[in-house]
Length: 168
Image (cartoon, rainbow, N blue to C red; front, side, top):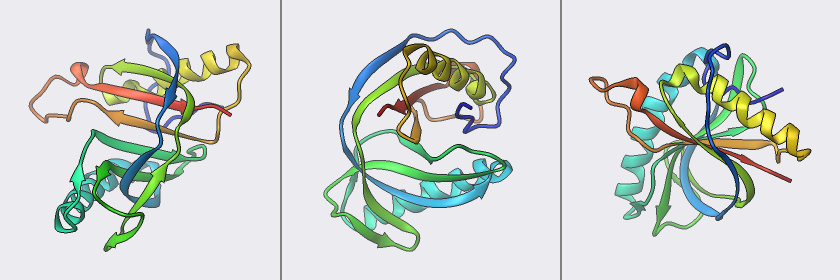
């Protein structure tokens, strides 16, 4: 099994450089929910706005790109946290559904995928194949960092998404 956070096509060819990198532990403000895969985009749209407002109202600062942090293997439902790395806030509930938590660091497979979101399934499959070749186990969570902010008028083929699969 491999992560398929976006209900993407897996029949397309994807070529990425996949490296083992040490990831830092980060403080993130997120909204975490179990959502249906077909409602994931709407969840992201709502959650990111909630997090940005709550962080600003609490006097914190967003210090990185948007993150989609998956807890377990998606099926028709997915346990996902959406938010941003932050500074100036303590762990715990923030406002509404937003909470500040630590995202554990450690050794991970990391790849930069460039392309439309419907290609993320194939990209994750390539990361999973590398994990299997290396004979390593995943930690059970994984995340996407949306390096470029999707622009409705932009070229989806230019979207950059960092894929991070923490290892045991």
